[in-house]
Length: 103
Image (tube, rainbow, N blue to C red):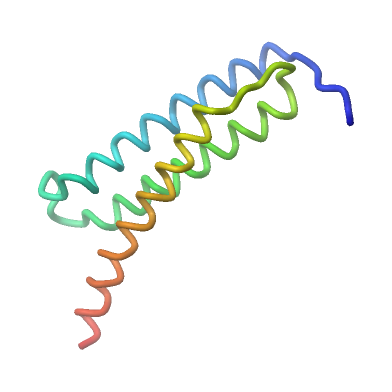
């Protein structure tokens, strides 16, 4: 197993990416739970937030595993699970919108 170095820049990047992923996950879950907040374009914004959450969370995990010696990763995993939930529920609504346009 390769030796993991402890890079302070990697720690800072992991911290920023993890908090960004948690913030986008919280906003996305809020929009999924209360879709009346954003009535126009709601599913598309939710899908974008879900995708951003997944990108930030998995990027944080990749940087953390590569550059931080004692990386835990539970918060970024929680955000990734939230991102999958957002994409699942927003994808259902977006598919319904597209199906109604086609008929």
